[in-house]
Image (cartoon, rainbow, N blue to C red):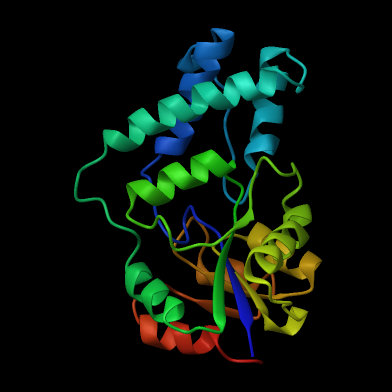
Length: 231
């Protein structure tokens, strides 16, 4: 039977080494003239870009509304592209990710999508920079809704539309590295495979009761098997 696996990006599939955070601070100066040493602290783990923008706009004393949102996103994407290009040419996804995605993609009944806090174009920049473009059919993104818990149904709807397949909730798994990914899966009614490759330890993730928690994807064959089980 068809199944749907929805992946987070940062800390789950790849690590940009702080390029995203730096690009946001760059854009804050580009758009509002606020230098980096006066930028607020950013808690990015599991956050949506719209949620992050709300904090930045509040810090700048500006309303979070159009066209300002699109102006800021454009500045951010420009800076993100430059930051990603400046990374070493040898940058790779996190250990085991390439093999895991290859194994899952080889299964006709397994559909891969995204469930990320990145704005769509930011997600595409990061995936392309790490050689992961063209793997995920669709998904939900941080410019779809400020509340990450609202993104699950958006991702499922888009994946069903593009695949022509209906995915029962018991056949959907969310993969992520933060408690917010676990909460997002729970809000959807889906299972969550938590992976401790980001800022959170295995114990801190298990405290939020995911379906399963693994240290990493170092054994991609084992992870692929887990993701294709029904309980």
